[in-house]
Image 1 (cartoon, rainbow, N blue to C red):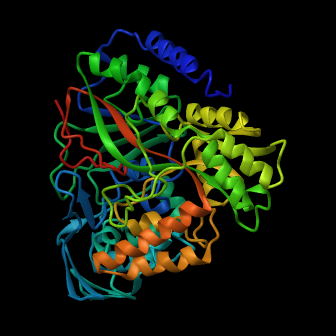
Image 2: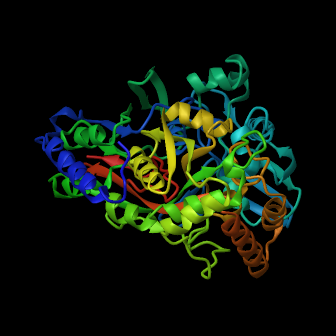
Image 3: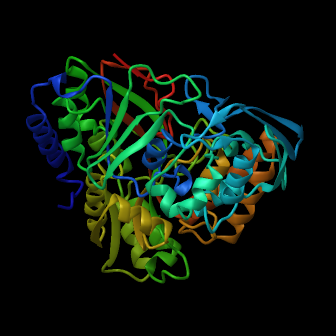
Length: 513
């Protein structure tokens, strides 16, 4: 059903009522076995190799097995060592990385500089690791100094170096070759992490058991991890309420009160890094009405973002102020504002662009990738219909959605939420014209994105990104929507669970009683 603005509130009331009725199940933790942590998320990973994609659910699952050099701890927002002990800047373009000693992969291979060099060769090869091409771009070369020291040489000073180092997940060289590279490794990974893979039944469960030879402090009380893909928001919430899961991700706002009121459950709210927009492709391969700036602007005027925030998210999401950076980030422009809700202006622009009777356009959106993704897409489509834009709605399951996003097939319109690492460069890089899931072609933006990636002076970097934001706003490169709030439902027996704003979390420090 497409939701017009006129019947928006009525539809939301019905949705909330249904959520309340369906979710009233008696809770019992008897179904949760001792020593087992059960996590319900929106979809089944494609691969358990963390560097296969930047999708948080896949990284969270895979990183229980395959560890990174560093980790940005949400408690401190500082880069903490994992497999590395520290990194030092010898000069602005030279980095010395000191590695932990006496660590082994679960198959017995040693973790050492050879494993790191092998991993860096794969990480910097865009054919093998395309999802991390922008993170790897500043790396020029690397070399082994001794078994516990690696030197990294950058092409230019990079202000978010620590974020690069936290994205590199270390691979065992011999095993990687034995299983034929990324495909084989993604199905049966081997790492240095606190867990090892025991079973993977596609679209049903992933089971991991504690690694008896883990080098670090193992999560207390957790002998087994069970990951369950549950695409439907309400079904996932009801499973939590019924005592089937310890942790449920992407709890919909409509179910938040139920989770908070349930004895034995906690609702964790995190201000998300995820920025939601509708991609409006102006790529040459996607010829159509969206190549006209007036049409893109009209779509922005046609959607009442605040009504969606207030209705679907009970006011807990934040408007974007017509830009892709969050208020907390370097380069946010306080002078920019959202396109106001103005259907008359939208109709006038469509008429001026040659569409006095409106137009029909395909609109792709995921189901199960984001909280309330279908509902948001339907609300947008209903509002666009009121100015004469008819959307052909194409619903995609999460895996297919991610494939189409990366293959630039999520066009001409696609509902997307992007949550890169917490720096302006990874955020802006997603809109560079040559990036694999950019739907924006603007050479002037490309130059500014490159300039911002190399500028270490905060004031100069701020002005670069503000200039880019003004261009993107004027061009209406996307339909600006909102910044989300991430909700997690967690049972009281889980301690130390703390996700980051980019929806990343690890089992370090997590325990169950």
